[in-house]
Image 1 (cartoon, rainbow, N blue to C red):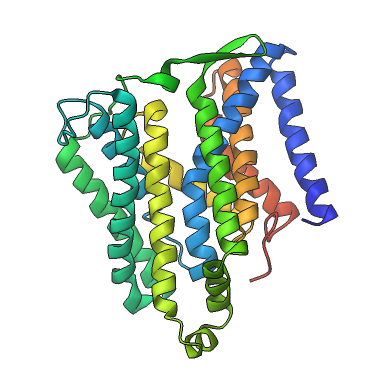
Image 2 (image 1 turned 60 degrees about the vertical axis):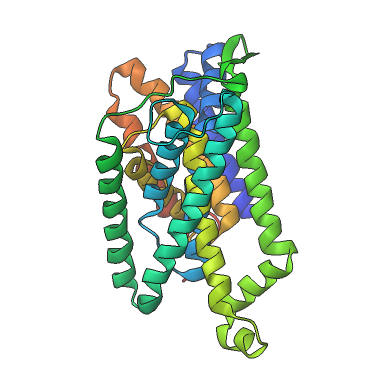
Length: 328
């Protein structure tokens, strides 16, 4: 991160926090709610955008089905957690069922990711075809969810440990699950960063992106490596959906909602920059929370829904390549 990057990021975050504090009327409790809510929403966005950024940055594929994987993960986690669904794991402990649901959703995302990557192989160098194909797959996945679960939104009703426990922050009570999501998201940020920068597979991935022919000449199957990257990106999205489900529930619109915001995040952070995606997600999350607070005050809820794109436009006017992007 250069000095100019740090200055710009500090200015953006400072402006968002100042706006939030002023719009809350100087109420420390309301301001605290906005900050925690912003970090929470930013981490949820990161769980979608991380896989999207990983796939695009290393494979130059903008996966429009990424939101659908997030949605599938949420539905699977919900189904396994609640009795009377399509899947009965026969586990009485709700906390253990949640863990099983997250694992099952992640594995399902990985399997579906492998299948999608196989579909994309023949058209890797035809970017328009990639966009159309991934968009088509997202529609197929959406219709599949409708067929199995209908269009009725599902609200998480069976709680467990950290989903029920609370803590106090600036005089306000919050569920500990918010802290759990923040911790999981941070661990994922660090884990993927270490994978890409500190491991042999990470070196191979980055080398394969720069010079695929040279890496292949060394006896390394670059296609297998790229399949691993694509699978990881899709699994992360499904994992994010499962982690988000106890808070968001499961709806057929959540995939599209988070995909649009995630695209704004990776463009704002800089296309292909994993660091930019992480910081961009936090910035967008804080901006969303601040605008949600302000929109309630003036009774204009539409402001919150367009906030990611408004922020994206503002940043791109100042820096067209995004916060950490390179000229492409």
